[in-house]
Amino acid sequence: WAKLRDDTPMMLTEADLEQLRGVIERISAPEVVDIYLPLSRLLNFYVRAAQALHSASSRFLHQTEAKVPFIIGMAGSVAVGKSTSARVLRELLARWTKHHQKVDLVPTDGFLLPNETLEARGLMSRKGFPESYDQQRLLQFLADVKAGRPGIVAPVYSHFDYDIKPGQTITVDRPDILIVEGLNVLQPAKLPKDGEAIPFVSDFFDFSIYIDANEDVIEDWYVTRFMTLWRTAFRDPGAYFHRYSHLNETQARDKALHIWKTINLINLRKNILPTRPRADLILKKGRDHSIERVALRKL
Image (cartoon, rainbow, N blue to C red; front, side, top):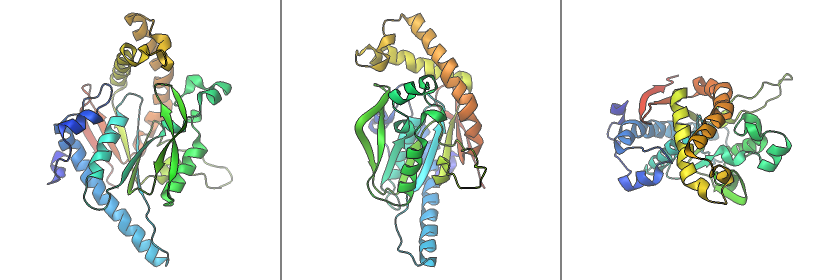
């Protein structure tokens, strides 16, 4: 896989990588060179081919050629490192000099229903499950972006507040590429009995990526991240999880394991992992967060 980079230059500095790293993920320059540069080269080919096909279709239909974004979906478990991978990929793709200089990234966390709504529906313990999202709003957002409409907004989610931020939005204005990152973005919808079309989120994707790791490894990462936040962000009285700051270290670790096993592991097994075979590319990570295996769907 690393050889498929060809002569694609390394476009990120150590300072760039420091800005892109997550709470516990430490992505290295060699990994960017070996894994993400070949991926950015492959996606460059895909984007150019999609642009050429759209141009040909527009000529055939005698339509004015409008800019249609190439949409990449990125899925995987909580704590598996989706956000870090998405940020790195966005920076690399945005630095290609031709075809796709404008690259946006939207996490689907912003499309979670507000806590008030989740509490009213009895879904707070199922946050992150498919039913906890405003699916209609997410589908409309993707439809508008794919149609090339300008100034489309997405809501913003705060992990500090553990809720949607009222009045805050991300504006997506006809990018060349949009990366959509989230737990359930490859989840298929239930097929209608009457044959009427019901779109899936993944129907809008031109390419999809699944970030994978073994269950026990992800559990360790989740607990490590929880404990890191317990020592830092949770100490702030304004944090939603400040309620856990009074716990001792053993109690905090037990709480992290309880949340993992009763919510996130169930979601992984029931809703997220079954979507892995639907991805065009699977990046399998080892215990040290490095990518050990790349599986690309050829057809």
